[in-house]
Image 1 (tube, helix red, strand yellow):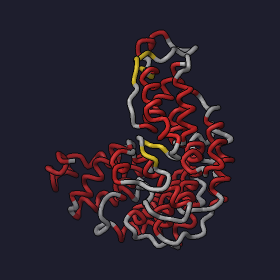
Image 2 (cartoon, helix red, strand yellow; image 1 turned 90 degrees about the vertical axis):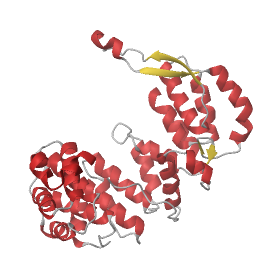
Image 3 (tube, rainbow, N blue to C red; image 1 turned 45 degrees about the vertical axis):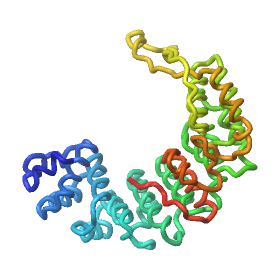
Image 4 (tube, helix red, strand yellow; image 1 turned 30 degrees about the vertical axis):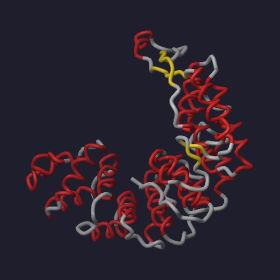
Length: 350
C-alpha cells in the first residue's frame, strides 16, 4: 500500500490495468490503493470498472469500496443500489451499510436478500447484519434464506439472526448441525451459544465429529465438562485426536503443555511422493497436563465459559480482553445479542 501511494496520480497508469483482472485479491489491492489516492480520475476509474465487471473482479472492488470513506463514492453507490445489476447493487448495499448510510427499510435491499444467485444474496445478508445489529431489526426473509441452495447464504442469514437476537435461531442451529457435511459451522455456533441445559448435548455431538475437529469445537463450548473431555482425549493413542485436544485445552486454559512433535499419520490413499510433506502434529506432555490439572482443577470446576484461563460467561474483564482471541470476544457479543443486549458489535462484514 505504501509503495502504491508513492505513485500518487500516476498509479492508474502504472497498475490500473489490474482492475480488469479476474483475480479478486489483485483487483482489491489496486482498487483500494486507487480509492485511497482519492484523485477524481482514480475514483472515477474504479467506479466505472465496478459497474461493468463481474466475478472475482467485482468481489475485489466491492470489498475495496466497503473500506474507504463514502465522500466520493456515495452517490454512485446509491445509484447502483437503485438502478444497477443485482451483483453491483448488493456490493453497494454493503458499502453503504458498513458506513451507517443504508436505511433499514431500503427498498433495494429486500429483493437482493432473496436473490437466486448465492453471491448476491450472501453479500446482501452481510449488509442486513450491519444495519439490523445497530438499529431495530427489520422483518427479514429468513425462511427463504434458510432454504437457499447456496450454503453460504444460509450461514450468513443465520449469523444475521444471531446478532439480531432472533429467538428461533438455536432450534435452527440444532437442525443444521444434524447435517454437518453441509453446514459444518453450525455446531461451532451451538457450542458458543448453547444455554447451560443444552451444553451436555452439544458436547456429546462434538464427541461424534472427526478427531481433528473435536478440540477446537470443545474449546468454543468452553465449559468445565468440555475441559474434562479434552483431558481424556489428550491421552488417546490417536495422534490426531491428542493434538486436537491439546489445541482445545490450551485455548481454554491459557497454559502450555506442549510435548513432542510428530508427523501426521499417512492417509490410506496418500501419494508416496508427498510422504515427507505431511503436516506436523503437536502432542501433549501428559505429565505436565496432570501437574497443571492438579494445580488449577478446582478453579476450573467453578467456571462456565473458559477461554485463555478466564471465565467469560457473564463479563469480560480488562485482563480477559487482553488475552482472549477475537472469536471468543465475538462469541461473547453474540451470546449477549441473543439475550437482547448489544454490548459488542458484530465482526466487520468484509
